[in-house]
Length: 308
Image 1 (tube, rainbow, N blue to C red):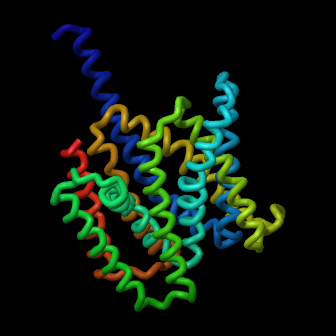
Image 2 (cartoon, one colour):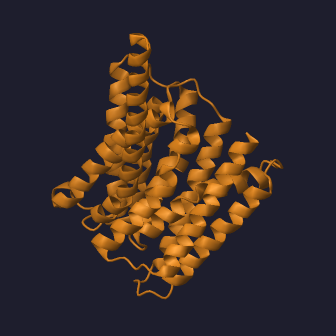
Image 3 (cartoon, one colour):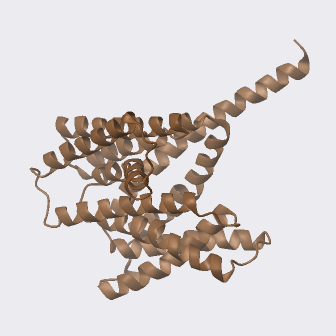
């Protein structure tokens, strides 16, 4: 065996191993963010945590790209970024964080995992995309049936008032994320996507701040407990920056069907950690319902990939 071939094969194997490690990191880190958000909002209002997190993350990303010589967005690009930020980081991220004041972190993550189903429904009903096959509709049915079983079981648990409101926030957040996904797929901008994401985070922090200010209840920064600051630090560094870098690496060196497995692992991690740290309600019905819902999401994703 030639030496160059052996070295090349060794490098390829090491890259594959690193890619799978990156996938594990993505699954673990994004799965833990739901529980960390739940921990953070125990010491401060949820919307306040959301806008501080987005502001810090946005400043880091925008500053990095400006330092690298990236030009400022044009007025048209800034308007598009404002619209994207409303759906992606204000309604989706901000409201999903707010929902955790009323619902378990595991349930929030499971509802968040349903976004491919909503994307498929938007494409079918709004854009008249008739290319969806029977597998996609079976997946949508399984997703709805699974989450219905989980919600049915949760209704009999002893949860505080506001549970239904929290479910509404979580569903609205997931729908907003789905709309954002469709908009971004259909509207391209000549701007680095991660630079654009930084601007979206920065803009969303301003929107959420004003909404939180009108709603009332913000704490003085000096009154925010150390646990909430640690949660914000984790969400920015691990949830936004490191996990995103790991996800990009895994997408580069692994097949898309493998790299996107994190979406099915996140809710499982969130449910397990939520049960362990917060004693969140979990039964056999919830486990079965979650498995059915995730099977539905998987079926929709597979059908869309085969169509593509």
